[in-house]
Image: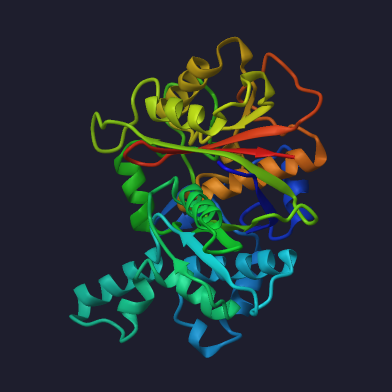
Length: 381
């Protein structure tokens, strides 16, 4: 990177809460937000928005007749985006871009309308525009009255961090001075969960053992939410933190969903993100660690390969809020920012770090999706 990019706002909605104070308190309480819920015709562990957050979403839905037909993935993004722009003090006169991605997009509406088609041979008139992946950024741009470019994409579970990469590229190109980036996911549907169960990676209990490197069975749990970051060039006055390095890489596939045994994609993305930064300067890594046997272990091996004797403290937030697919990367960045702000490490209960850093200055954040498309981002105070 030619220069650091300032993160001037961070906002999210998830099982952790919908404001920074509630979210930080959720991280401090050492309790998982994963609970059993009835999805379709079965009870499964998931991580859901609180009743208070769901009320905010319903208020948003009912605030405009055009919003009533939108999927939750769009509404989650809109609510988080409003808060991020408010924090950053941007207005509709600011020429800011938007890049918000999603792994699954409008899953609930798509499944309902597909079922209508199977049963009745027809769908509602707005089915096509409300199930396209691009409608997330487009509706957010409409809601914020944004005049810059708006982009949506899906790169599975590394989607949000790829949005961050895009934002950095636009800013460093000089084509924009401000960019809103993030991800949104509303995957708690019967069909989506059935897909994860078919892969034999879904947890059978109210527990996601993310970063338990000795587990014998995968324990991934799905969560819902959205997370947004406001990025700016040359803004040190209002910066929460800085993006100091970015890295990306893709594994050569062994089969359709896996990454290599020692996650070569992560080894390359981490090295790219660090570039000239000394290994011992990295205090913490917020790992992707989805709670699967191979996913957790391969990422850990990649980190060992890169850092050797300079292993930072390791953590993940998926044991607490589940895997939010396309939103997970910026939710991990949010955790990194909060740890830097409070100078306090939030551990995973399933992993014991051998070293302890008294001062947190640089935190690396990882994400990877199906196909081994890894991203690593170095965040600094």
